[in-house]
Length: 295
Image: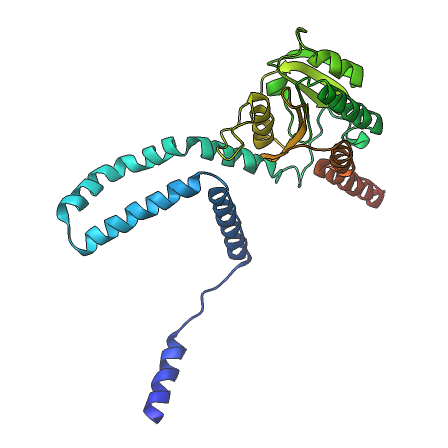
């Protein structure tokens, strides 16, 4: 028994714990973050089904290795060089979407806020703009006039505004109704709203390829969901067939929204303080404190 204890002591004394520095902890946290984000991305896209298929192929290769199926292993060895290229081609839409979502995380802007052309202190839009959008949406719904109104938030939509006609007009229910009126020059396409102004009309939006959307939904709804998938915008869709008002956000569609429901959704967006506004205020506070300490 004594020899056994002595041997354990000798074994343990020979063990050395690795030295863990601060940068090692940072690396572990970064790897954990990116692995977690990758798992979320895979789970929420069709890449999940493709990944399961890849796992089945890998399991088949492992079985072939155990059973020493030389012909299959030879084929796998020669094809493996093209596998990475094939994966990039197959996953190209998902990889592009993942990079866009990573850009929406605003990691850099949370540290150093960059100014843009928006009047940040004014918030997203005023109560007047909120009421005008709600009034126009349901007045168009009553007469079954199709409409597509995109409210820009953090992600600037100049890329899509350039596909339409620039207006730079104050938001009003009369103007929105006239834009989407049948057989008018500007009725086809989407309207992009930035703050309290209509930036452009007749804008082309990307269509969603989400196969889970209702098959009865038309191009207007798919465009509304599509722009919400590639940006953080809020899209209001008025159906030309039923007159129902729907809201698209973060790739999800809320159908048959009531007047009060739409008002609450817009109010919530209006009251949500954008990250860049909060960080800008913090940044200004740091600058002021630094100036005071320097005096």
